[in-house]
Image 1 (cartoon, rainbow, N blue to C red):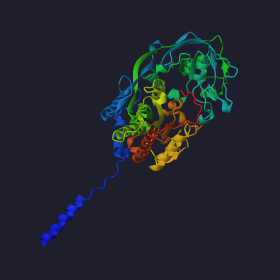
Image 2 (image 1 turned 180 degrees about the vertical axis):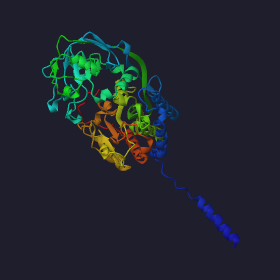
Image 3 (image 1 turned 180 degrees about the horizontal axis):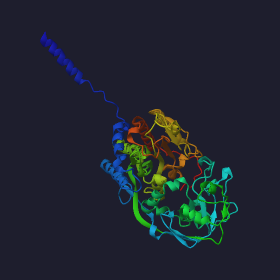
Image 4 (image 1 turned 90 degrees about the vertical axis):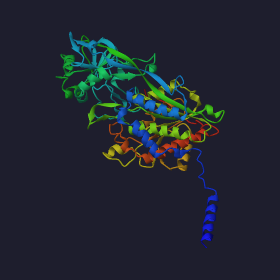
Length: 538
């Protein structure tokens, strides 16, 4: 009897082991290769204190670039930067004020930089009469034009710090130079010799910090963006109250002392005595630096279509270090902005190496200097490392790691996504088909709520113009911009990894990845059937 039982058990075991194993159908996209743990590990490094906020340029940003490029190399990506590298180098100029050589002379008295006035990083000289223009802002919607009846050509404009009373940013309109104008822009475009700012509470409260920044930190610019026929910015000076009083001494303005803010606010625009001139010489030092885009390609499988590209983009820079710590924290870690997009791209790139190779090539671009004015994307479209017309679409990821509920002031979280939601901007603006694909791919996966609140280019927040996708759209490339909103930690030292919603980050990353692969295998690229009016947002 025992032998029979053993035989039955043995036969049963044999029969069981002989059954074919049920295999899970292989996913050609390897979407599950993008994992929550992977995103967490990458972001914990990219947004760590050791990278010091990834300012452009900085040591921390360089470390981030090498971290990304090292992974791309190990995974077998083709470098698509300069000279067979993953890096597209961008020349920068760092300009600082030369304090000892910068002087102002008024009424025969010479004033020294730092104590009597501050200067900024536009070099130049002037010796000219002066005009006072109140705050110096033109606001067409409010009928404000302090330059009416005043000729500023060849003269020094004097303006109060800050905006006119009763004016908000929403009153400005969209177009600089048309709907509104600033003192510095008006001075540049109307032939003024220079600009002097009468300091308000902000400037007076940060005088020492601003002085040190002008001497050491300075400003950084991209020489390649200089336009030979563009009017040059004018030198700008912030006067001490002692200098302000000397400027207006003896003028018949009805103002007893321009050092009293209320008196300055009440004075109407006027030209000062033409016999009184102010002379200034703003000297600077210029250092040469570099930053870089990171560009990699995963070649497509189709002989013809591989010459076209799906471009995934994110910016890997942030805003660096705070001059003075806030609650003991001086590092703008940028976990969401745009650490989330940076690691989303990195996770996609890793997953793609184990997926079925798509027909079109996939390009990954980590842009530099987005926080400085979309530098990396602007430089790339001006100096593309692949034919610009071969880019089928650009999917831009800038902040996809946060969601409600959040702490703090509710008013600062009104424009902020909930779990299972993401703002989709621009998907329908140039290509009906791209907008439809964005929605259908999303519906087939996690059914995120695609919120179109900021999709209108005329939205007061102007988000369509504020991230790297815009430079591609200006060049006729249809885009989708993914964004989680203007939460309370935006551009603050509190943008930390522990506030990231990794479940939402995972869903959004996988959805964007799947959309890119879907487009890569289409027989024809999404048609561009709409146009929009591009603006100069430099």
